Length: 113
Image (cartoon, rainbow, N blue to C red; front, side, top):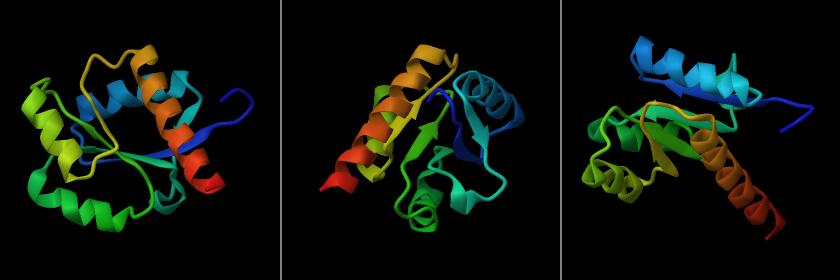
């Protein structure tokens, strides 16, 4: 994303997770949007009872679940519930860049269709 920045929205994360994710996102030319509605991608905690509400609230935008758990079953549960992806700390720039690029490619393919 050279030359521009991508607005993202982060919700439901504890301060430590949020700051770690933000640090990596900043290094990748992303910024936290002042308006959740203008965000291209949403990052949120994995709360199964709240997730359906978040899907409706952020309709049309990919939601990436952020969790401390690296348990495969939690990852699969989030994807089956409709998450676009799942990540856990430590937030490596390569990992987050891969997620962002994959989501942007999906978005451009759907826009072209």
